[in-house]
Length: 190
Image 1 (tube, rainbow, N blue to C red):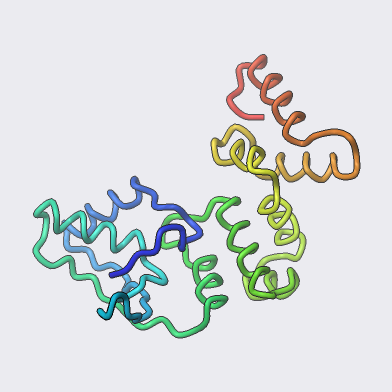
Image 2: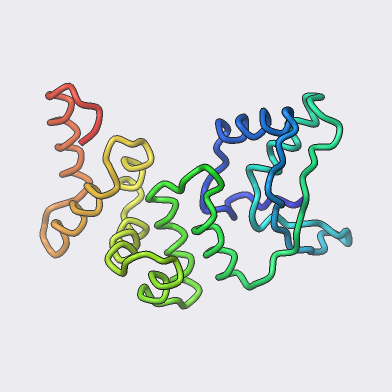
């Protein structure tokens, strides 16, 4: 297998991998991973298009001696890069995408030349949902970090970005003030 770092819109979640290791050790079947055959340094490799967590779990289960063969099947992935991104957005396999992960997927599709209305239609989401998450995907990294840390909910960050557009106000600074207010009220999130 060839796992490209940063390819998946969702970073590897070790807790989810551990859940899958337990499932493999118990003999539970897992859905096939989707791969694209590529040549790397003259050798054929199966590049993971869907199933990064399942592959990581299968490798961990074998490494720990929990099973000899993890019973992981692979299928060819049919489609282009945009199809692969859309597939990532639609298949959560028990681990839902966080708003920022979904936002990054929409941004990748937009980078493939897709209009927000097309993304909304193909992802079976509202146009407003896609537009709002594209705002988050294009936010400053410091704002995104507050969302990643779960200090600020995605919707609050998006609303702050929208309300400060075209003004001298700064969304990040306002969110930091909101964090201080939340702390004064013994809350962990804005």
